[in-house]
Image 1 (cartoon, rainbow, N blue to C red):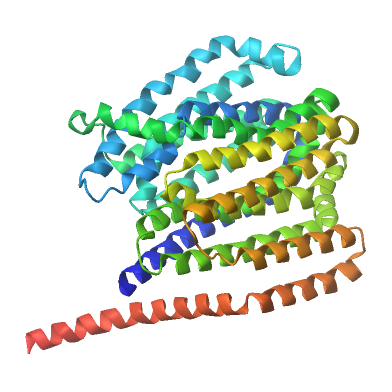
Image 2: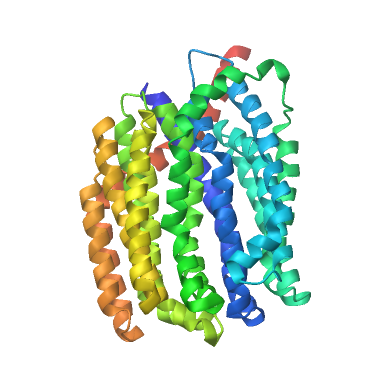
Amino acid sequence: MAEKSSSKIGSFIKGSTILVLSNMCLKAINFFLLPLYTDNLTTEMLGVSDSITNLTGILLPLLTMGLDSAFSAFYFDKEDPDRSKKVFHTLTRFFFMIGFIPILMIAASPVISQILFHQTDYFYIVSFALVSVAFNLWYLPYSLELRLKNKMFLFGLSNLISSLSMILLNVLFVSVLHLGAMSLILSMAIVHCEMLLILLFMVKQKPQKEFYQKSLMKPMLKFAIPLMPMSIMMWILSLSDQYVILSHHGEDAVGIYGIGLRFASLLNVVISAVSVAYTTFAFSSKDDSNAKKMYYYVFNIISVVLLGVSFTVSLFGKEIVGLMTEHSYHEAYQTLRDLMFAQSLYAMTTIIGYGIYFAKKSIYSLISVSTGAIVNLGLNLILVPKYGIIAAALTTLIGYALHYFITMYFSKKVFPCQYGELKVTLVLICLYAVSYFTSELSLMYKIPIWCACAGVSLFLFRKVISDVVKFAKEKMKSKKKKPEEEEAVAVEGEA
């Protein structure tokens, strides 16, 4: 059993590493191209682009109806050896049909443009965004299939190709062809089409009628129904502030706020990669005797990495934004601290929240995210009109903090597990406080402050880090030893 668990966590680490490294290179390239984007896109252009992109941020989960989560939850059914095939083929057909809804919505793109910007001039950009949603729905089951089959190399390769294409297209459309507000959304539509073709080639499965089970849709929808309003609430929690900003401060403010969000998205290099690999690992390991111990280590290590990045960017945010963006965007540094720590809380919530999905009590996730979203929206409506993007960032942090604490309560109620969350939370609060009081100091003071905080944090998590390093070394030794043993067996056989 121990060897089996070791193999699973080894696969998780391997999968996460592949995805983190592939995403890290591309995010780094995209990050260092930020001056190119801000030099060629005005704050208004970026604000228009982000506002339309956020529309797809609510449309996609609404059309998905939470069935992407049901895909994972129902995929690993040991009592039915064909369950994985039935889930894949059933949902592939479903998402194919649903994908035509955004295509039909293109007819309403002038109306959508009028609602958002009080003019119809941007209807063609809205149309490209809707096409992008359709392609996303069509390739979603193939993406999930690769993830749950733990084919992380192929999944990472598909992400690598699509992300590299996105960067090249962005450069072409933004700085060569000067397509303005349409640039980023047109790139996204093309890349999602490319992603569909790549995944079709990699998965090499066509929907088969014998594995389509209409009866399977009922329990999956029953599981997913509470996730539909949860998707709406998650959108309110993470993206609604931009529409409040748009309403009261215009496209320029949305564009500046978007720079802060792009810096916070640096954490998605770790968050998205680990989440993708963790889904398979978490569901396949939940019945193992040492599963909770493994979850403890995963939560702590990921938290240390995320908090380290959040603290660093928050502390040196003024210098980084000043270096990386054109002058009209410099105000964005004031949003970094709250947005970075909010993203860290989101990732921590995701990992702890798997206990709720193990118990198939998705209603608890709905309660958690709804509380955070409603408080966030209420504070946005009160504070953003007067205080602008700074208030939007703060209310986002408050919303995610509520989501984190409520999820922790419910998850431990249905799946008792010691994650070491008290120490992690205290470290988060301390790092946030230090960055709050020192972010305006000169570099001469910031550098020793950073070194001191890094040293203390590493000391506090020394045992976890030491155990993980020890585990990694043992895995490397066992890999080296295995070929030697196989060779020895072969020699004995010949003798």
